Image 1 (tube, rainbow, N blue to C red):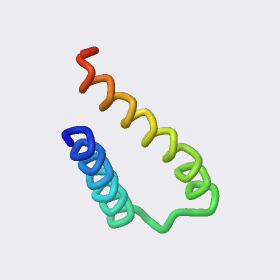
Image 2: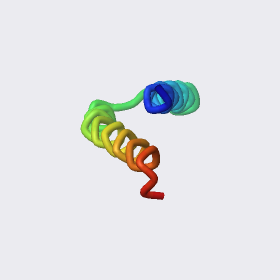
Image 3: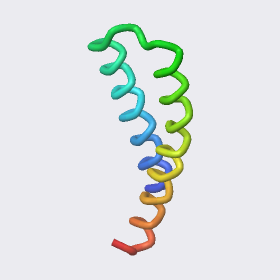
Image 4: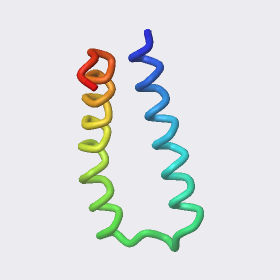
Length: 59
């Protein structure tokens, strides 16, 4: 249950971060959009793995 809350919290934080970036930057070019789209899944997976490790008591 705690892990689910952590994952939901990460997605909410990611959503707000994307909203802030879109609000305060100029419209993204196709190259920037492709770069963000390429790295976003990796960031999500790393965040989930770190949350699981934290729940397991690794740090």
